[in-house]
Amino acid sequence: MESQAISLDDRDAVEGWCRQFGCSEADLIRAVWKVGNRAADVERFLNDAWSGHAPSTGLPTGPRS
Image (tube, rainbow, N blue to C red; front, side, top):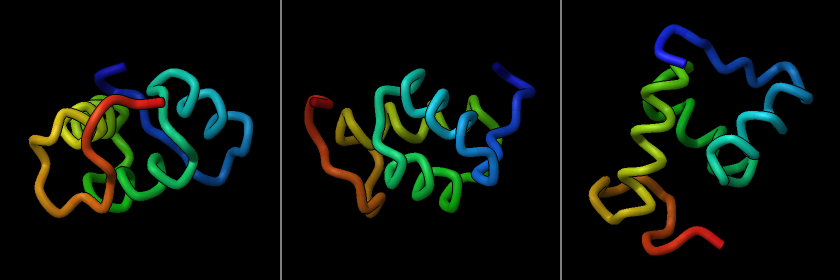
C-alpha cells in the first residue's frame, strides 16, 4: 500500500478504499484533500483522526461505526 495512489475518479476504487479503511466516501475525500492521494498517508490520517490525534480534520473522533 505504501506506493498506491487513491483515485477519487474511479467509483469502484473509492468504494474499495472505503471498505479497506472502514470510512465513508466523504471521509475518504476529506482525507485525500488534506494529505494527498498516497494510500499510506490517507490511512495514517484516518487512523489519527479517528483516535483523536489529528486536530481540525473535520472528522469525528471516537470509534468508527
